[in-house]
Image (cartoon, rainbow, N blue to C red; front, side, top):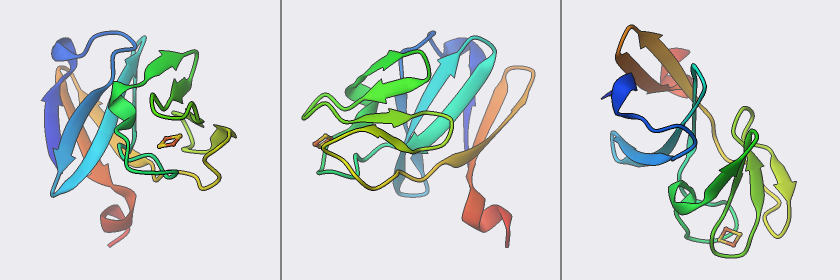
Length: 104
Ligand code: FES
């Protein structure tokens, strides 16, 4: 589990968060927070360094786009979706956790 402050997040400016050794890309859009794997499924690029448009994030290295809500690939060259993580928010505290561990 990783925690961060909602107030510290900047609209559509992803940040990389360490979740027990796994890098996670966390993006704020309005009042919502989305968390997907930070490592692009195409090669070894950090998605949090990419640009966000609508609910899409574009990998800076070769331009693949992923849906921040589902992790699905929207634009090649990536073809494999990225993992999504569970996000909970209580006031200013945002908690990111693995969906796998949440299921036990
Ligand atoms: S590393 Fe992301 S599109 Fe190639």
